Image (cartoon, rainbow, N blue to C red):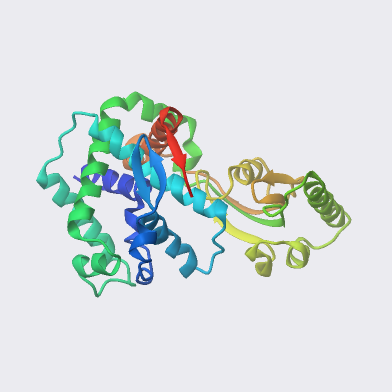
Length: 318
């Protein structure tokens, strides 16, 4: 029962984000004027996306005091386009979802809402109203998510998931590592010269450390990451976490106490120091089958979305 309900609802959160219904901390901002809200900002295979949909999601960035640049707006529009692509795709499939299945998903979403201390005092209906939504819209999202889950599960064989589990055992066996890092940020670097300057800076920092400078103190002085105040400590993380893949691969290839050469990610140049490591335990596929299923379905979902994007006609008119 757990697997039948939880996996599709997690897919719902991953793919559709339910307009941030479960994790927003405040009411959405006041709606823009009707005329502006009805402006078309993109079309996806002929289906229109309106500015009011963009404004609702941008409100999250604004409440978090994040800068809303044009690149951020384009990223959000692409998220909205992804939702439309999934909806169009599922509508073209012969996949039935019963009212009982939708209710099961709704019950799970309500449970997750009640488990969030920020919103435990509200009913689902009340909370949806504060977000400019309602039960009907949520049911539509759940129905789409469940249909997508069925589509994927029909096409994924157990042998595929077992093979993935064996090839990525480190994701499931509790193996984890603790590391600190120093970051030279390049996210605002626009020229090759600026990138080269950042590269030279990280190399100078590495030389200081090689010559005996304390890693934590050096991180406090030079790192652009918020972890700098803790000496660059990133705490423990596992494979498959939200830590940049390049950093994960580098860290797991190192021994405790070892310091890496500069590592490049989309955020900039990093130096890593491994400070602790927990070895993985023996684990059987059956023990973590639900987790494997969730992760593998994410991968298949992303692959499907990529194919849909490649075939789609998307025009952004922002």
